[in-house]
Length: 275
Ligand code: C2E
Ligand code: CA
Ligand code: CA
Ligand code: CA
Image (cartoon, rainbow, N blue to C red; front, side, top):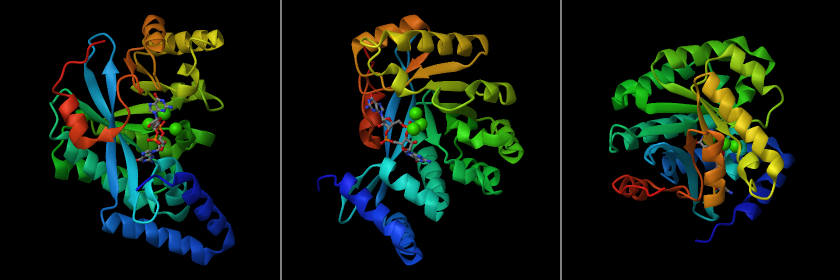
């Protein structure tokens, strides 16, 4: 079935405005989708620039909707957050990702996105702890990606949750870095392991030279704070050359591979990547 994402979104967003009843319908659709196994995790490689190795796979959700075909997360994650279904969906994704990573070589980690809404729940740390224990995945192989909205308004409870999560032995990456309001203050409050440079700075680097000093500065910042820096959205050799020269430590993007089914990602790990 061909993806019908935009139409799906319009349908759902207009429904959402209508009534609580429709919102319940969306929520049950999401929950039914989880039960009926309609969700799948795709993986996109993160490549270490110094070695050319794939060092991680980012789990990115896909929904095989019976009527709307393949729906991308940009369409359903906001709805799942709005309805609260993200709690179940997020737990499913974490479990699935840890299980998938057990089938990969030990040096390859798995990166899982956490919604800010999941931080609103007091049980988040216990949930992650339980999933790690059940899956028996080494915590060091799990990276959680969060956006700075988690630390918005100096949220003490979320900060504490982040500290507890990191104490489990996993790593924390700050996603979409550079797109928020006061990014630098967050770096003072929490020792992130990685900064993911938002793709808006990487896109068109060849044509838009004003992005270059920003990417260079973030790479330097990461180096000085002993954090890895991942350039997101690398699509061309020219962009790769530029971000490597700027000092980024990792890259991710269509140049190396679009998000793909787990079996394809696992197969990719068996072949050396020529940089
Ligand atoms: P994100 O975490 O920033 O993920 C990167 C997005 O950029 C992905 O979109 C990926 O397919 C896309 N991308 C990667 N490389 C390139 C490139 O070279 N060019 C371009 N144009 N795009 C590229 P995707 O898979 O549609 O996911 C969108 C967003 O949905 C993610 O943004 C993330 O915020 C959210 N998301 C996906 N899966 C999950 C999940 O399991 N949980 C949560 N909470 N959010 C998720
Ligand atoms: Ca991400
Ligand atoms: Ca991102
Ligand atoms: Ca994003």
